[in-house]
Image (cartoon, rainbow, N blue to C red):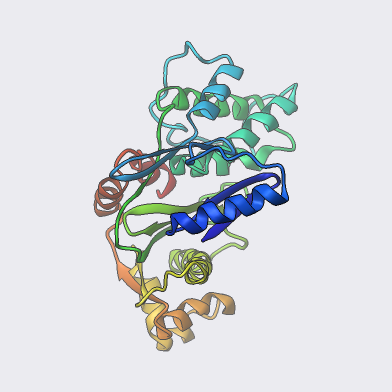
Length: 318
């Protein structure tokens, strides 16, 4: 039995109905508590159960965002951001936004929406960089994200009823993509069986001298997440019998992780990145090469069903 507590809201789950009821009766004697039954709504997350598994969405939360910004009657956008946007360009020719509070509020709500909308990770990553002094172009880009939401209000994540509970991770990097700092972009998505459970897009802390270094840093960031998830699942009684499959489209980064001979050529890579090689030796992960676009798109679309992961492959991973 496991209990998730957030202030005065409790989420209880387990595989023994008698023990669950006994525990709820005990809490009722100790506190003034109301049993709301099976999970349907929790902290803005809407949960529906079926034979295929749990479908988690934030439909009402998304509808509130669209309504609050006055876009209920707008034409939906095809993607969260335009391709080839120049939002991070320091020479962006756009006046400063007169009311930055509305921008910060909207972007803050989009950050929380990313809990069930992985395809927004890249767009939100871009928009959050201008919270201090947003420009009108940034506000227009945030409204484009809202227009995209208008066409996909009920979209969410399907957590499948799958006996396969092995961890699989896909990671990639966009070398020197930030025009202001020339830092690279890291991105990853973690699958538990056939269900996505963790994803992130983040600008790297330092400038990479090569694309291989950028890919290796992305692998290092993804490795930290996979290690934490393995410990978390072990605490929940789910042990990973073998190494987690680690998909990367850079053969150079995979060779560096597997072969210490390459270290003489990669001294510009920081030492902490070599934890990836140690994880390969310890069989925590198993690195696997994957093609950049078509194969990733096919795998993710097949695995995630309703989620429009072509947006991630098209915008976030490029």
